Structure formats: structure tokens, C-alpha cells
Image (cartoon, rainbow, N blue to C red; front, side, top):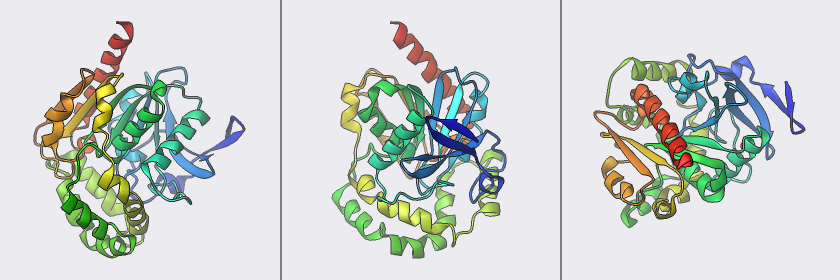
Amino acid sequence: MIAVNDTVIHRMAGERVFGPGRDRHFHLDQFVASVGGVPMAFFDDGPRDGEVIFFTHGLAGNVTHWVHIAPGFVDRYRVVGVDLPGCGETPPLASGYSIEAYTEQVLGLLDLLDIEKAYFVGHSLGGMVSMELYGKAKERVRGMLLVGSAGFMPVPKPARAVGKLILREGLLKTLLPRVWQSILGTVFERDNEYTRQFRQSIADTYDPVADVAPIAAVMSGLKQDFLYRNYESMLDDLQVPLHLMWGQKDRLTPAALLPRLAARSEHIRVELVAECGHMPIIETPHLVVQAVERLIRETRRSARS
């Protein structure tokens, strides 16, 4: 138990460290602390006087999705990652779900941990949170790496209409237990040791009925953000390095938009990962590690020039 800014930070209990959907190979230090009245679950490891890399997972994810990436930086950087509300071991928000509310929780955690500035690495939904945070608090962002990020592709009106029908909590609670394995089958393009470990972790720890309710609530609660929020216009005034990484075979956030995004600012760098799906953070983690390293190097060069 640690006291910071009059808030008590508890080391996460073992049964929660090994909760549903959590990769048993993830060994960084995990904690729980109240942020805005919500007991937020997070990992925090590495030297406290080092630069910070902050990781934000995707929809239905948790901090252990960074199992092959964050540990590689812990000897040189302070690495921090969060279970967003309603995901992993962080409970839902009483006020409901929105990207803005998620961002306020992340900012609150940064304040609690005395983190003034960080490199932000976000996957999918986590990319939206990273962009929202940049819009609210540019001074806290050194640079960003967004991997298969949502929030950049305009949703056509017909698709919005379908989304409004499908993204309802009651319907999702009925559908997801039946189709979650099919959805998981569309996430990866490669069959390798990393994707097999991920699938096995889900099979061993995840109850498709009992654990689907929180996911349904998050998806339904974020419906407006998923269907209407678009951060592309923010790229015109970008003031920090932004690296975009996409799987070439990403079926959830297609890579076709990359050339258009790259043209919006001189601060943007793009990388297309061949024969890779929506989760390069699992499928090709070594490439994501290299991308984080490049982001840090470029950010430092930009700060010196």
C-alpha cells in the first residue's frame, strides 16, 4: 500500500491479476487506486525518474495486451498502462461511457502518479483516447504511436443506421456470446506463437457468457463516439510526432485511409505491416517495439531542433 497525493494505491490482489482475459505471462507491477471515485486498475513499473511511456488498450482489452511490448522498456523508461473503465479490472463509470470520460480518467491517473508528460501508445479504442487527450492537454504529450486506431474513418450514413440498431446493450448481450469466437477469428492474420498464446489465454480465463455483459455495456455506451467521432481534422494542427501503424489485413479499421492521413501533417509517419490484422501489438510485437523506439528518437530530435 502506497500513499500518493493523499490517495492510497494498493497493489492488485492476485485473484485480480489473474482475472478474466488477463495474460498469465504479464509480470509488471499492477495496482489499483481511486481516480474520480473509480478504482482504476493499472500497471506502473520502471525507474520513477525516467521518461514515461503510457499504454492504452483497445475495446474489450486490458493492460496485459501489452505483454510483449511494455516489459521491453522497463529497464530504461517508466511504463504505465491502464484498464479503461468497464474493461479488465476497472469497474464501469456511474456517469456512463464516452471517450471524453475515459480521457478524464486517464488525466486523473496521470495527476495522481505525478506524470507531467508522456509518450502515448494507443491501440484501436486507445488511439481515440490518446487523440482526445492530445486535444485536451497538448502540453502533456511528447509524441504518439497509434496502432490500428479507431476514430479516423468517417462512418457512412447507412452504416451509422445499422450501428444504431446493433450497438444496443440488450442485443449485444444476446449476440456476443454466440459470435465472439468468430469475431476473434477476424482479428489476426498470422498464426504464430503470439497469436496462439493470446487465443489460449482467452480460452483459459474468459467466460463468454458471464464476461460479455461489461463488453456489451462499453460498446453500447460508446456508440455515439464510434459512429460520429472523427479526429482527422485535428491532424492539420499537429505539433508533436504522430506515428500510425496499421496491419495491412486489418478488417476492423482498414488501412486504406493511411495515405490520406499521412498527407495531413509533416509530423505524421505511417507504417503498414504486411500480412497482419488488427492487433500488431500481439501479432507482430517486435515491430511495435521498434515503432515505439523510432517515435522516441524522432521526438527527441524534434525537441532539439
